[in-house]
Length: 480
Image (cartoon, rainbow, N blue to C red):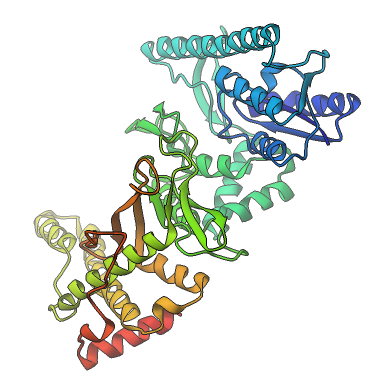
């Protein structure tokens, strides 16, 4: 199969439709399948179609790759050289639309590919430094300097062309507000993506772009600085609003909660779940561990983050599972005494009561006092022991660990926040470093020898009163 590939770095470039032009040119050059996308050339993190092309090459499905020019493969010299080397090893021809073959197996070919790749990377870094200097200079003058604005906003410039203000875009602003309303009304990120494709086809976003856009503090009318290149999260956010907001602070907080819920459920709907899906976390980078199979009876969890120094290292699934059983059983045994403890107010109640006492001495604060009293009632209505009863009740069930993978994994997501794994230098040194439960204290005890785990607690050893057993049965029934 002859595959054509091209990309652009920014959505704004798409207004001139360079991807459509590249697609037509690649088809004329003989490409049977064309892959085009929007993503930075500095890495392949946001380029799923480039990663797909690499998988096709590894699977032996590609005979030739055609690209408009070398910089369309990337502006990272190491990434480009690795890709060209992969094509050479898999005997895949790699050419551009000028007819030049990209290769590294000959001295001249490697020199040309390296020089052009180095120049492409240099131009990219030079442009980045130029933008950084311009933004720093603008901020020193008190201007709202930003290289990019979230969807729904636009820059206002003075007569000299200087960026002086941010305002809601009259065209995309209403569309942005509509997307926020859809999401707050209950749409998941995937459902929002499909709705945008259907009802706002001229302003599409990828799933990842939607999540980052919704989480942006700039939607509340605040400037942000120092974006982390890995997480894409801004480390500094202005305390004051300096331009019109698309969402209120309360809506922004609700969006963060919904995004966290969508993150926990992402990818589980509509597919068969496997044990520990979404629970395993790499101790080095914090990323979610994914499954890797060597054969049906050997299952491993691995870190698939390409930026992590433990990338592709693995740990046996049965080792993680046995440690999780040990940790949760001992944790449940430690939680039982809490069920008999008399109910006490959470610390927030005492803080609110002290504030009410001060406010009552001030006239005109009756409405504020009433609101704080309602907050106290809401805090007292929350059953703080429900997670404990759920944990204890689930583990007392003789059939809890014998459920199908999907049902057991759903139950574990209600009990466990994360299973943190240090992948070490390989399988022999990999170990579980923490089992973080949704009950307090969050850290469950771990066995000393993780290769020979003996669970010292059985369900019968967890003694409960009849009243506690009745409450627990209702929770477990709701869980199932």
